[in-house]
Length: 192
Image (cartoon, rainbow, N blue to C red; front, top):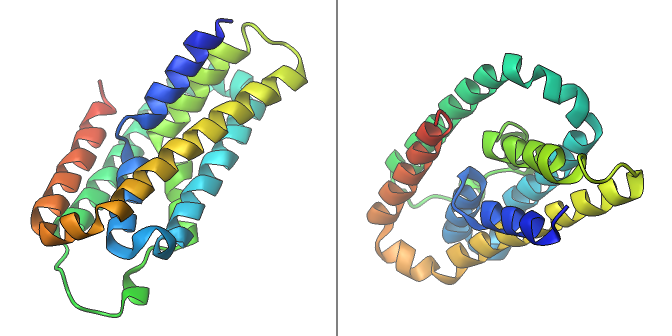
């Protein structure tokens, strides 16, 4: 296996806009980096659990991918459209911010059904890890590396939302519409 190809795939896939990145940035924009920590930690935990499950079950799941992939895609696209509508068309009400914050469990569950993350781990395992590494130690190493790099990219997006909070708040409507459109694009791109 080429470590350069592996790292290129993992870094580029993790850093590009996706549903988790966009939602983490949106949550950090609304509540700041630390204020969005419950939701962000749910996404990070879900990402790790999804990675571990993918590592443990890639071989058996790989045989079922042609059967279940259309259902995963449809469910993921519907959920992304729902999230896009929530982000894009919610009223900017002055309310107690603790009521509007997303929870750990919502971030965790979202990540477990995030089709981009599912396909990310299936590709990492089936194209970069399993064909070249048959030992449990090397599989764990590469899987852990993919999870850590993914976490860093997610935190980068959250930090971006937090740093530019004032700019985004000043242009709240434009920001929400842009996030809505990016989530809609993510939903449509699932079927490419």
